Amino acid sequence: MSNTKLGLANMLVTAQNPAINATAHNDIGDVAPYVVANLFHYDRYSWWRTPDLALGTYIMDFNMGGVPPVNAAGIFCFELISGAAPSVEVFTQVTAYSFGGTWTSQGTIANLATQKDDWIEFGLVGACHSIRFTFTISVGTSSFRMGNFFAGQLTDLGGIYSRGGNRERFHNRVERRLPSGVPSITQLGDPGAIYSFPWAATSPSLRATLDDMFSKQLQPYPIMLVDEKPSVCQAILREGKIRDALVIGTTYDMDFELERLP
Image (cartoon, rainbow, N blue to C red):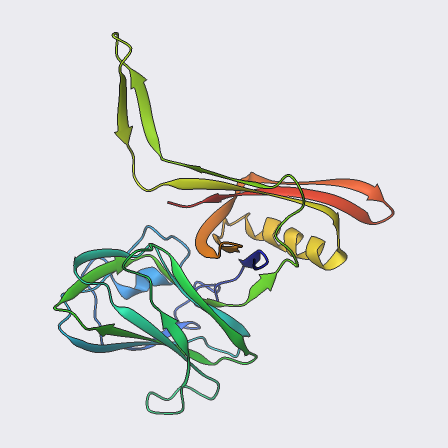
């Protein structure tokens, strides 16, 4: 089992300013009004959509306007429009952006055919200037849409959770009863989940991380959640609440819930 990890800051959109976080190169294109500018904010439902892509390899580069630490990359709210899902290889560059310069492969995001959210984690790149997503279409043509790229640093919470944590998975649907008693069910979209994370005797570093998560939810920013399965999703702090209870001195028991975004 791996520890629970959180990605609190997406360095591709954290400034919400294309002058700082810019698309340095895009040979995929987009379909108006679902343009690449939609990627520069946290709304996973304001989509970027590709045109029909033939067999081949397509590159999208981002200049992050600085040198943030990065050890994870992801694609969120991916949906295939037609054809087959691409594989996506991720590269990083630590010097000033150069299309033909030195790029280091960090691995492949390979499960978009079966997962709406997918990611890779790699060794920390302490000063990542730019990041490249290389899409390979290997079967027929492909068209897809997505809500966000992610590039940032995961925070390891040092464990899964304390005793009493649970995952509640559910289908988003409306259930009605006809006069006869027969249920009438209307599906409303993708399954949801609520993750409960109690943490007994929280360490000062973990408490600081959770306080940072709470402050970011004022926006609110989606959280990249990697749980012990392992699997990944975007989530929000449920009802914007986090609970703590003083045990002794400066030691607290803390408890929070994350709600998966469908």
